[in-house]
Amino acid sequence: MRLLVLGGTWFVGHAVVTTAISAGWEVTTFNRGTSDPFLEAVRNIRGDRTRHADVVALATAGPWDAVVDTSGYVPRNVLDVAHALAPVAHRYVFVSTLSVYRDWPVKPLSEQSEVLYCPPDACPDYGTDTEDGPTRYGYQKAGCETAALAAFGADRATILRAGVVLGPREYVGRLPWWLGRVAVGGEVLAPGSPNRTVQPIDVRDLAAFALRSITDDLIGTFNICAPVGNATFGELLADCAHSTRSDASFTWIPDDFLLAQGVRQWSELPLWRTFDGVWNVDTAAAQTAGLRTRPLELTVRDTWRWLVDSEDTGNHEQAAEIGISREKEAQVLAAWHRSHDRSS
Image (cartoon, rainbow, N blue to C red; front, side, top):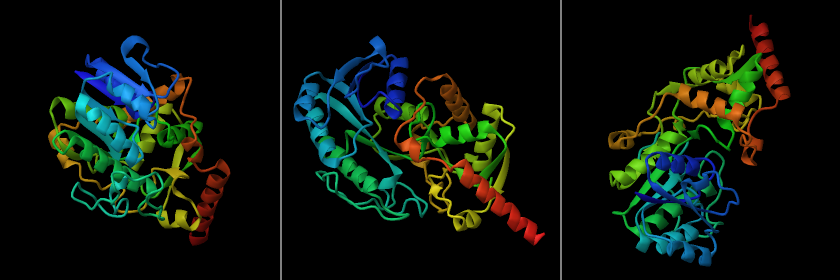
């Protein structure tokens, strides 16, 4: 199987490439990077997907059985790239996001839920950010989906709407932050309820399904998350303690108290969000089509091993915005304990 991966050097793209290599596929990567993490295992084509000449040159290097696009964020660019590759690739797999749904994260979702409108030739300034609602990122990704379908047609395109993706090489820093905080030990502020269910998908399981969509000639759109009820927040933090061999103790503080203390959801306490739809995404279509998800404890364990062993542990711009400060955490914990002392 001949595969072209747009991106392919860091998180989702890296997982797609390594999974394909392990399966014996012939892999080509296209990106702007100056380093080659795969040595002689792939054919590297250096270029910028926003430069027309680079994309034209890329198309002449085909053909491929399939393209997996992990780096498309602007509809007009995805449209141009997909049109250039349509004559030299049989299938186009576009990695999208749950953010394309108008009601994410407020309401439960399925593939039939309403999607944000964005034209396939939209520029990067299309869409707006709203608090706890649609984002420009969501609008843009929705336009990218439309662009992929416009270029390849519904019978040659597959759309993967990924939820929260965790695992080794995660650059957003959500699971790495929790692992780092729990490893320090002591009293850890835990958000909401330990029984709140979560649905993160391991990056390697996302990659495996992307390749399955090619080998099984799957068409259509799939929500890519772990099944509802697959794990809880309490199990996630317990797995962090187990993997790091930490003596941390967890103080679970209700949502309303945290909100009153000004704790920011999703960023200061990663993966914590109070809306009903955050972790209520129907994945039946993907499960029926062959999506398999490993236990969350394995994702946690392997991410910790990567953090310990890797020279590059994801100190990226996005990761800098993740996590509550130790000072604020202590203040919130103290306020919680005071409120209990007064009520006792």
